[in-house]
Length: 300
Image (cartoon, rainbow, N blue to C red; front, top):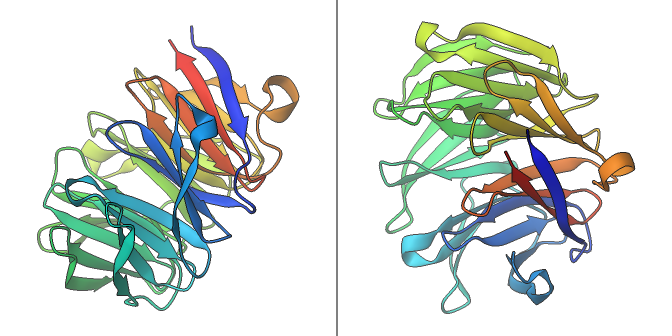
């Protein structure tokens, strides 16, 4: 049985919070509409500090820990790279013409950046040098998920589809017309045999990776857009919705396990935009348009 405890809720941002990540020591970084990145100690949440400020709204964050560099993607399409040791900006890229929605590191040592302009730019993480730009769609790209075992990635698109792309040749291997509206979120199961997708149509899908991404299951999971999906420990994952809810699901059956809402458990008052899972601590962190960060202790 899954047991959930709300540990804390803090509203330190002055606007909506759109992104949340964590480092190897379980420090949490959040960014949002006011252009500020805050760093949180999850065990002492009152010790929050501002580590960066950029011009424009922050839609995505990535921390390259070997060099202690923070990559920040903004609404304008600009990407800022900050050296957290010297507290200085060391790179400023304007490679995209629209919002940067996701920044991810692959095992090949390359950073992949997905934009509303329908392209993915690819960078060498070690020296922040540009490698290649891949035009995937005429519509925006919202999320990148790397397969845990194969050299391929899933890319969510506002064309109501997701694309499976080789990370070696950059060839589109499969295009799945998945939803009736934009696909916002993607997440592979730990074994890589399923891909979960969520979108603006509020539907949650499970796809059979081993059978060319055929549909396994689907259900109306939220009232509005599913903004994010993350794996938890064990056979569970969580979704974040514009309906203000965080929901916990069984990976195999898509059975709903728990709803973290405002009325019953003191959840968010506005859209929940992103989630991050601190697996060593069994803590799920959610961020929202209500300006707050909530830490949930989840045990099963």
